[in-house]
Image 1 (cartoon, rainbow, N blue to C red):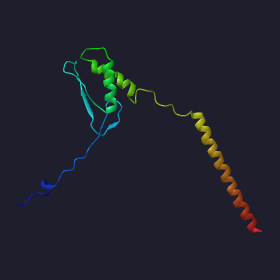
Image 2 (image 1 turned 90 degrees about the horizontal axis):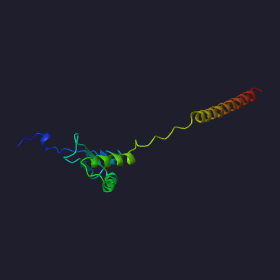
Image 3 (image 1 turned 180 degrees about the horizontal axis):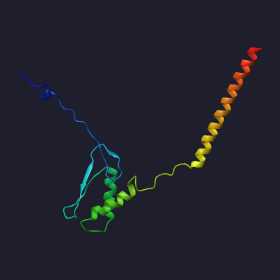
Image 4 (image 1 turned 30 degrees about the horizontal axis):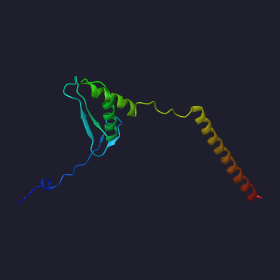
Length: 130
């Protein structure tokens, strides 16, 4: 019986980890899919969460006193406001004038060492001529 190589070859399935919808960390094992209920207004959202974000969502839902169909969406917003990497302002870059002073100091030391090295070479050359 003749078989094509493609038929007998086993396909390798590459596991592609998904990112959490809130904290954007990779969810390597057992991602949790959370869907809004059918009663929720359109568009109904679906989120993929890691375990720490899912735990935070359950805590927020337990604290909530809202009993409407958008309760999950509101709790998800509160959790995302706390845990999202975009929720806080990024760290400020170092002061530009301070960085320029450091760069100038490195440049000045380089010039001094370069000049001293050439002076030593010049002295050795001069002594060698006599």
